[in-house]
Length: 155
Length: 155
DNA sequence: ATAGTTTCCGAGACGGAGTATCATTATGGT
DNA sequence: ACCATAATGATACTCCGTCTCGGAAACTAT
Image 1 (cartoon, chains in turn red, purple, blue, brown):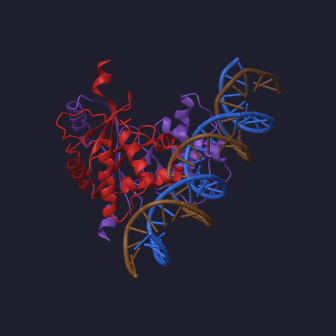
Image 2 (tube, helix red, strand yellow; image 1 turned 90 degrees about the vertical axis):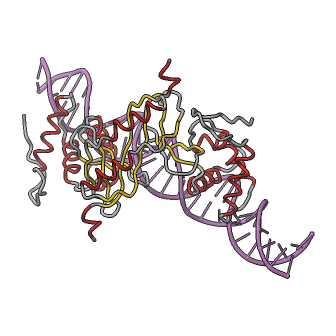
Image 3 (tube, protein in one colour; image 1 turned 30 degrees about the vertical axis):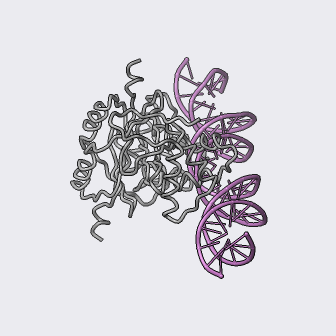
């Protein structure tokens, strides 16, 4: 089942099909010196098939023929290479999602579990200033926004 | 009501007297229907004695004569009653700190581990707007700021 | 191709962090 | 003092992720 579930947004450059996504990511990993392996492809493929932020264990269940350690390793590699981002829910549950590289935050729906990207919200500068006012040099931050998405608000 | 003078004689910390802090928190808990117990006082006292955000396990080590489960329960109670706040480090380590009640964020120094409160930074409104622009109704958020504190920057 | 080198895999052991269980004890209202 | 019940503490357990290590697969050089 190759289902590319489009996300909320409007202007979207045509998302390659799942197979292409896998090839693309594998290519990038190869450039970094990592090998092109079957289990790795399966992990990437499963990640790409998710329409919602997912947990590592969910991924393991979705890949019964791939070792648990391999799934975790693959996931970690994808996070380190900025192909997948980590999402922290309100209850501190850790989830993952395929992401466009680059710094961004997430709007997370507590009802349906959907996530939407939030970019260029300008909060960074504000925080850096506020931190500086306290003699603090900001070097990073963690930000997740919780609430309800359009569909769930309407119900 | 009996006000037990806590802790065996010894060194005092330069902050408001630990005993008073303990009595105050215990009083609030009693108002909520919780009992005034010795282990509970020990936990609160140990929490109040910390000068930096601490982990639950650190607290357990600091209280060898209090059961681990009791320390965790006490900590959870303090968080639920808004006496103690949770702090999430960059590596996702969970720490705690005695806090003034009310919503606020933390500036966390990655060098010395110190934390400073950040209030009224205005980021909330900005986020709410940005979320609304995506048809998202914001109901909460998680925000931690990482960097270096004054002293550590100066070194 | 073939051999050699190195990464990667998978099964399971392991470890940290927090919760559940449950018999026992302590607390506080009467 | 009595007693219902909240709290404690030892420990078992779950969950999630990493580590270990022998064997397999993938790239490299020949």
